[in-house]
Amino acid sequence: MESALVGFVVSFAVSALPGGWIIRLLQRVGARQTVSEDAPVQHAAKQGTPTMGGLLILLGLTVTTLGYAAVNPGRVEPLALLSLTLAFGAIGFLDDYLKTTRGKNLGLTSRQKLAMQIVFAAGFMVWLRLTAIPDRTTQIAFGSWLALDFGAVYYLLGVLFIAGMSNAINLADGLDGLAGGISTLLALALAAAIRGGTEAQGMWLFAGAVSGGCAGFLWYNAHPAQVFMGDTGALALGAGLAGLAMLGKAEAAAQGIFLVPYAVALSVVIQVTAFKYRRRRYGLEYAKTHRVFRRTPLHHHFEELGWKETKIVLRFWLATALCAAVTLAILRMAR
Image 1 (cartoon, rainbow, N blue to C red):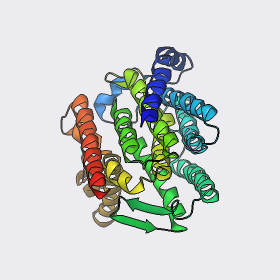
Image 2 (image 1 turned 60 degrees about the vertical axis):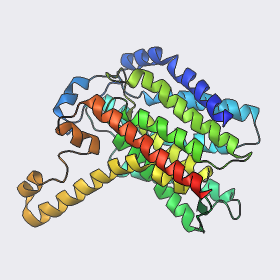
Image 3 (image 1 turned 90 degrees about the horizontal axis):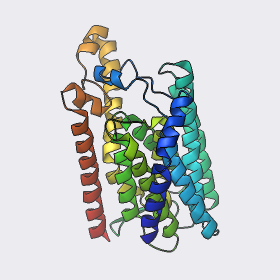
Image 4 (image 1 turned 180 degrees about the vertical axis):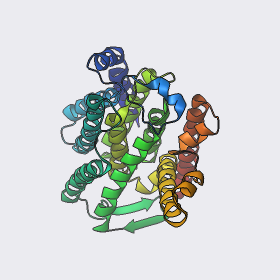
């Protein structure tokens, strides 16, 4: 676990120290947030805030991981995780770039993003298949209580897991400090859930580097935010965390640890599904006035209820910490 601490400290420093300069650079090149018309009215004040701040996270993560790889040339797993994370970061960067150049909240279409996510996730799973370890790679276990080998189905589930988690973190990126704080806690919890052994050193370091990079970003993203993460960081973080759970053989534990971003994503699915059903059955006006949530994703529902932004963010952090603590406690008993 010492490697997780090293990863955190190095990544935090690399992300936080040049943060002010990078934010000014983003301002100069016109990388500014365009607030969606669907966002709560109070978000209008955030118009023009620099975005693509996820580059700070990716910078810390990249420098830390490459440094580890240089010292440990035989451990390729962190490099594979870094490649997956940067690939999804590239999707997010393209989406953010299109939004800033067009001057409105219109980047890649949902289908375009999903198609690229599936391609990159599938590429990672192909690598995982080529380097598969018998009786380990395709097995999902929760301590000594449960151990199932999914065989070839594992790789299909892996693609869905990576793409789904990427979108879940992206949906959670809607308030100052929300996605960054949640991801910091998720990475730390995964570090605690990863099975021990020599091969785990790289996974622990990667987890620490993700957490440290997010913490360094939070230095500037805490309310009132000086910079936003953008899809550049959100899509990358979700994919990296999912890949980390798989390589660290913490897939089962991750399902409990990830409950908060899952809830955020599920709120959107429920809202859209219910709206389409009610529009088809009762008409558009009925569907508009009979929504399940006042607004989605879930954190915006609480904004509409009158909660302050800082209160929502803190409670989502606490909920994430609670889910992680309960999951890790159960995992400890299972071992």
